[in-house]
Length: 114
Length: 112
Image (cartoon, rainbow over all chains, first blue to last red; front, side):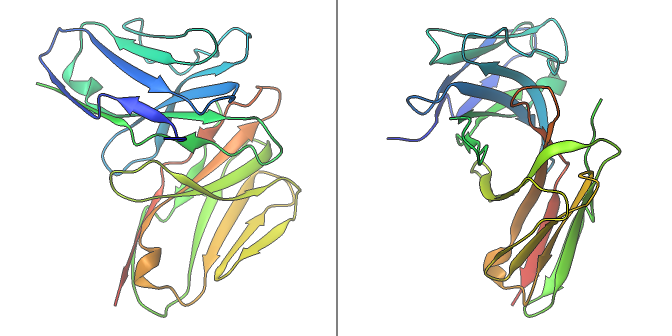
């Protein structure tokens, strides 16, 4: 499809395990965002990539969280030593950075830490 | 730290009623967006406002950006059950590239 693709759509893991969440942005979009959303709540900013610039990591909640974007396209969000409070939906979005500034979101990866 | 406060957090109304959702901040934003999200899906853009005092209309939805670029409102006229969803405002802080900060959302339920 032509939209933002995220995988896995659902992930159940045990406390202390590491997880990787993947995001395939829309082709040609230079900006990529990761947000976290708890049930029925707003979006918590995690990290933002724009072209070849250094990513804005100001929203990462702890050093257990990291993200990379390879070749300006696919991004992976890694959570090490998961905790129960990490349980949430992790949303990825991409943008072409045009005048509308519209973010196109994937359907999210729902993470449950037992 | 820029924060966007939305109110009300929850709103349950009958079909045909009008409603207004507010988005406020102490920070100034270069632009502000409104998104709507349905369960199991990502948010979808409704509108972007970029000029202080700007008013945009999208069918029964009216969006306003405050003169000082710190606040915004979304007004829905004659709400319908199809308007049910989570409404999110998002602001772009100055000099932070394309970073977008979201409010905590307003959960709207319109009953037939």
